[in-house]
Length: 379
Image (tube, rainbow, N blue to C red):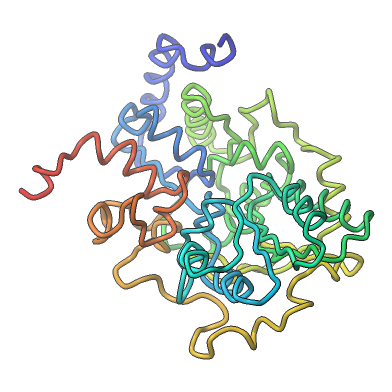
């Protein structure tokens, strides 16, 4: 436990907090774009430690949450096709589409299997050669290299019944889209540690260069986050904006070159729809022509399978659900009229309550239940 304890020492936090308070001379909005950061901030009570004029915002850092209804719709209609075995991660089962959820389809008899890794999808395709095995591929730059490596292996082994419904997302373009929207003043970003182990620090450099916004790549322990906040405030105080790596024990400026090469071999950059953010250019990935025969949209005409009344991009959330606004940082979970009443982790209405790293689920688990009892809610 040595390494864990090193980053949770109370006495170090007590020395760092006065330095943060000294630099917090004006209201500052700091946004994280990583679900693990969101969880760590709430779990360790970091918001309550900070001066009142520092606001921590959670952005689109959960890949489950940002997968738009249109991608869920495609997965649903695929699961209804004869001879198809849809494979996905557990959280995706409860994410709402426009007309159903995968858990509802499985209850009705669709062949849908939950897995823990994309390798299991390859194993299933080899085990059941008469089925079309379709993997719903979601995630940021952290998980996409593992999917790319399995795609390369399927190609090498000439596996002809494994296909991919690709919904991968790239984080830096989404950060740019948030700044371009000007819906909220963001004064600094806590950049995602996991993503940055793959891509390094350089893909974020356009943010300080073009927008003058400081960025710090942070680890996930409480001292990591507090130090990262201090570094962001220090940049603002000194009148500079750059990308700093606080998480130096895992992140290098150049990132993981091998993982990047695997990604570049299999994928090329494409535009992508995000729940709550809409279409963002160059924020997604698509299979290169060499691997295009593994793209399930080349096998099925999904547009013809989708209900005609359903839009093909992104629609409004369920009436009253503020998941889109929460993903953009313009609203917080308690401001949603469905939060903790109609929408809970046990019966999620919006995607932000589905994943354990979703902002609503995190707020409910680590903050809301601590400060509010059922009796007080009704008063």
